[in-house]
Length: 139
Image 1: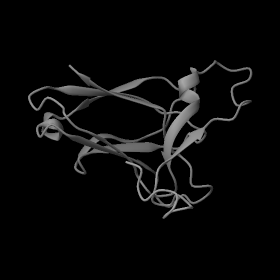
Image 2: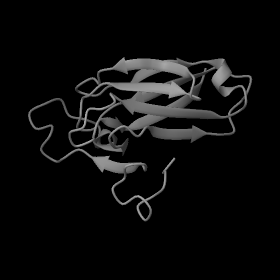
Image 3: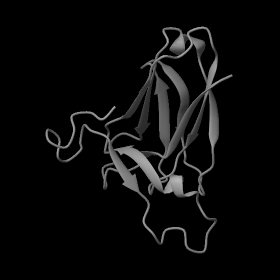
Image 4: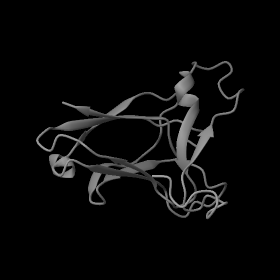
């Protein structure tokens, strides 16, 4: 979900944006997949939102996600504004795939809303809610 967009929200305080990790970040460390160097992000306390439609209402799903980006701050994921997929967890470095079950109740209407949050009130440059890859996988 892009939010208001750059025309109405030029500071991206209520809109998502695309970010990337700088070129020298990984020198001398375990190499990252190229796709992990790009990420969707939201700034400050705004959640990063994704919405999926046309899901099978009778199926069980799991989520596979890569948390990358520049800030290794804790991140939390909520489905449909009420199901905690995971509490605040620290991002792994180097990044690696993490998997979580999605409650059947969250997809029984054939849709899924996901919202990621960084720790509220941190200030600084506003970064931290950064997600590189997401898969919603039917079990």
